[in-house]
Length: 109
Length: 116
Image (cartoon, rainbow over all chains, first blue to last red; front, side, top):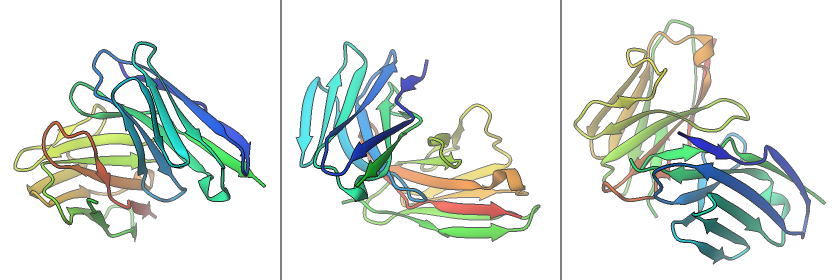
């Protein structure tokens, strides 16, 4: 099946840290992606995890646990420009991306 | 990094007309291109996958006669929305992938289609 789930919306404060969770269920797995999408724009790539563990890239980090079907995106030192939707997607055995519905992140001053 | 362009970025058309959207990979050869549509505040929905030189594979529920996809070269794929209706109004996004088995897809900027 194609089951992938993430929260619909989250709110955080400028300068703080926020963690966006993503859970999935699949029989075929070739990695987990996180994308950022600002309203009216195409998604932009943030991270890719295929092995368990934490990948850090500047203010953004992504974690994967394959056995739990779980990933999170961690955003530190939040800035107003981080207000966007964050999409997680896993790549199935056919190398197709299966998308979550996206998490709208609202940053407040 | 790899760049994918789409043209036009915005189009407004009358109901019943056809609209063609182009997707180009500018600095790499895309063996596979994907077409997505996205309704407001919704996730990306894969419409079809096209491989250069072969027929596109459409997702369930997507009408192949309505959404014509042509992937004639390694750098160009086109999506034609035939006999467009207001319910076809959406944000259409293409993405491209280089070699088979590569994981990253590169997204075009999207095309906003409004059918009056």
